[in-house]
Length: 364
Image (cartoon, rainbow, N blue to C red; front, side, top):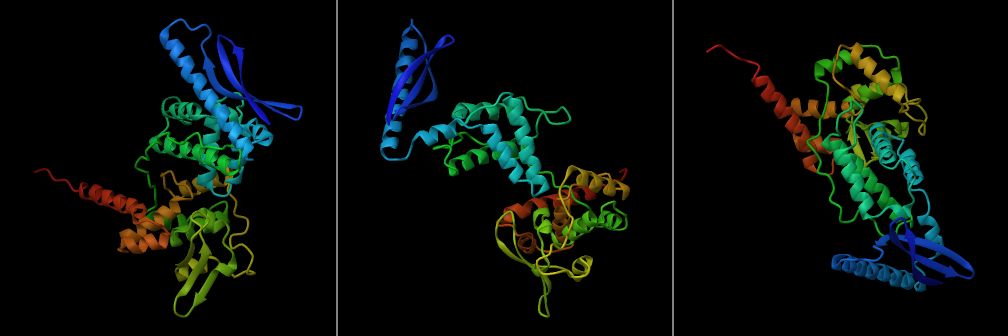
């Protein structure tokens, strides 16, 4: 296969591209590098020279890759594939947990707004990555018509970068174009949770979806994530005289194998034991409708906080710390790899203590 650097007039510039020829077949790869026609100034001539040198370097590199069997016609076809379609398929694969899928889906919506017309992989370069990041930072709007929060920017750009990393793993891209682009810094996360009194109110209130209520209360009593509760099977619920009830499972998020002690009350909440391979919470599914029913149930209990399913895990963590469990133990119960992740909950408790202290005021 022979690779030739060629030029083509495009609007008011000259586009540089590679021409691949092999056994009567021809493919092109546009480099997104441009020359200024008839340069008049020294600066324009210098820029043209450096641009052409860069194109020649890429051309030589492609020839070496072809000779070594690394790059070929198949790679060119992959680069012509739809990037939006690829990201859409990745987002659908994440439809297993509410928070994760929601972030992927939101990132995809912003990507489609940023790119109203489809783009191929060969259009995705460092400049594209930086422009999408700038769009998230300055132009993207949340549902309420406000600019994105710092954590939303952090999350969406992270998902976008994860898609590019996966494309490299899948052999579509040779190099991740996000390499060298600085990520957004994560903001201080908002950890909403229920107090013990609020949790009791929820327990005493009927929910239109009883399976959803049971799963939420179980999460608040154990700290398990939605993804781990949804896939929980009866064989993972175990009991021994020494340990009492416990769950032996592999975390879906971290892939770590965990042994999680649970209270007798949490075990009783599950009802009669089913077959070993049956799901404990049969019929539990994530959807916008189930989210709505969760919020309606919480509101019916007289709680006006914006509660999602993941808030049950936050509730477990904050209640454990409030009731005196040391932070190291709470970290292990939550399955955190690093103690600093758990320290976020400790800060929430400190803030609540400060808020409580300031409630007592006298006229002195």
